Length: 402
Image (tube, rainbow, N blue to C red; front, side, top):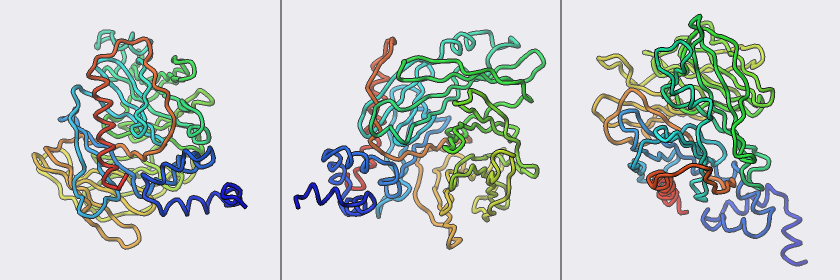
């Protein structure tokens, strides 16, 4: 029996187990063996745990990005950083792709930092037109000149075919009764164009939270979710082309730094309070039913100003990541182990901290993107910024032996 016939008899789970013993930079080369190996190596769970990373940026330093390893190798306590030549933000990350915004140029970019491929396209035309209205007009947009945007990636085809993703942009405006309405647009790379999905019903006026991090995508629901300042959640269904409001928990104490996330397939809402950190999960998605999942004693202490010095970073069923910050000081990243109930210090985010800290999770994969630049004139600094972020990922992955 030749080696090819022998490998064909091995199950996918056994192949992944065998390849996992290789350093990843060598294991990654196995994807060139055939399409089966490529799909296995590229698939998200294969590399997620040891090399999950977090991008981080802040409102006071919008050009400075950090890449924070969640499972750092020994002796690494501070992730690498980069200063971009212009202001940019990371709106979302999904299955190895990141969604960038360049607000001063009204451009979006879907990029794979691992393969260095990217697709650049402009904001929705309708949004740009409304954003240029006078800010004091009742019907004007109120999203500070840039849309909230999220990324949806098709997990079944993205490692086989390029451009298996969609971008959803949401804008807010106030009607004559001072109620908020949302307009949704979806970008398809297959047509390289935007489509307006819908305009929502009027809701109680409450802004989408700035600085909350990326929107949450629940694969089972097919919806993207944004947290509002009131504590409820906007859910956008791209299949039904509709949206709804998910009610906040009745007993919600919001805190000053709430965080929306996903754990074990359920949406979770994290509230950092004075005495503890409360984690609730949406156990009944259709009927908007929440429950308190756990309470964790906080290690943060209140500061003598208008916000707390603890920021929830991320949560899964194994641990909570939490940033301890203070004015004009560095920010420490701590992890709470759910099995041992013990806090440990993971590392440090350097430089001055401020009240808006944005953390975006990132897991490197070989998800395919075709490098495309639409009918837009690109400043050199945009290409340079994309390259700098790619290099930031490369430096971080190098610490893992890539």
